[in-house]
Image (cartoon, rainbow, N blue to C red):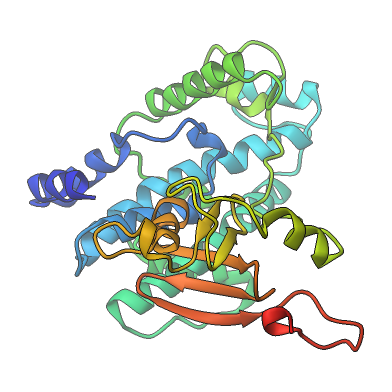
Length: 319
């Protein structure tokens, strides 16, 4: 976070500089063409010093919309036949596909992002949310977010009018494709590539991988199975049997809930683990109580139990 703040403050003098800073940020291993654009928006907003200036917010939205639009074209291409894709590549237009249906697909693909971004802009900077007819929603939201210089009627509008590439489009998409090709070489089991990726238009032949959704641990049906396994288990930090043992339901790590033996700088082991595992938030199953607690910083709340006794009631503290 500190490095991001310093980098941001060094370029905050102009919106264009913010755009350059944004596209030059180092990204995790997942290719940018596979990343969720709404999540990227939230990450960028949260990592910037507050209060955020609206012109910088608009710059971020413009850059991310170019990514979203490229993803929309790729998704559309997957739905087309190989003949249609070749025609699109050679002539720049789908001869056998109705242009109106193509435009409708692109707008529907991008519309959820515009809705989320409009709500976020309203939350950050105030102002009224625009109202419109359903067939004008894309145009109105795009104009509200600064993707269009002024409102255009639906008769003369195309979604491509919202594109504002901070660098040449071919160069940027080529970089995204190279990143995707490199990822495919390293992880052939997670991505399917239709043909060799050599240029920007080849990205339209990529099929989306299926990533595992985030989920909590799958607990056994009988609580006695958990209790017997963890009841006398020793802590990996202090090598003692914890008085209040707990299991992280995100990663399965066994921790002391509030033992003094594992404290570091006045932080209990479960709090430290929540910082490392969940960016400050943790969810734990208390072995000796069969209940679940949620920790956020120095605060916690009792969620309840996912196990019931023979009478259909919670048996807190295993009485």
